[in-house]
Image (cartoon, rainbow, N blue to C red; front, top):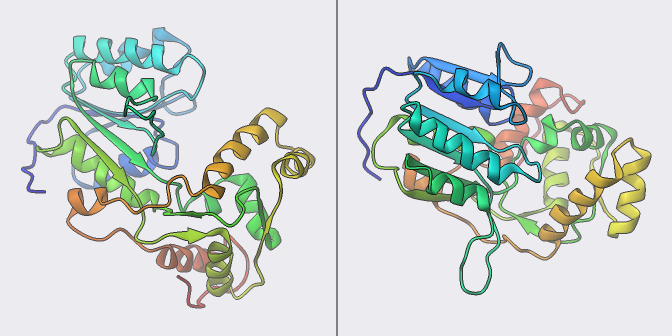
Length: 290
């Protein structure tokens, strides 16, 4: 895709600026010389989806905004109100982190937060990534499993086109700062389909440690997760997400990274070697990984 850099000097608002993608978006924007307004519940600029009194202060004067929804039952309503307020405050671009979704047979999307952004009146871009590589190194529950030598999920033998959060961030920065992305919905995936056995094998190669994948039926996974301190309700959510992997719901590669960045997405092997060298997973690292 051919793009032209936007020369706006207005700050870029990044919601969830301490999260997996938000922190990376903020860092890349700063590297490119953009003024960033990072906002989160725990950051220096306070933003809370449940407190509308925090909304206007983060929007005032911003030219674009990176949005991560609340993941609460009322997320769509909050996103709709926030989008309208953003436009009223002069924000021109909204970039929403969504997900590769499911559709009804007629093709009507079931993700109301996406509709809220589309109908906000701003130039919008929707990012729909697959599972992040970084879940295996930055999510405490899953990373703890890797450190313990066994990845336990109810994902069966399904495959997923896992993607690097750094690639998502680079696409987001392009959408926030360059022309040509308004009205676009980008599905984002890594370069290949991987099973959880593949993931375990790659991490084992990278760390030089024995790492295995142990698939469990959903009810057994719930019991296992609860024993590890995971709330039962969240374990149920994980079962739903793992179940989608088990049924190969999104077992196709997407071309969003290539369309926006003009290159192939990063491979899981490169990610694993980098993380292994950091010592996060234990072991010496330096072993070839996918």
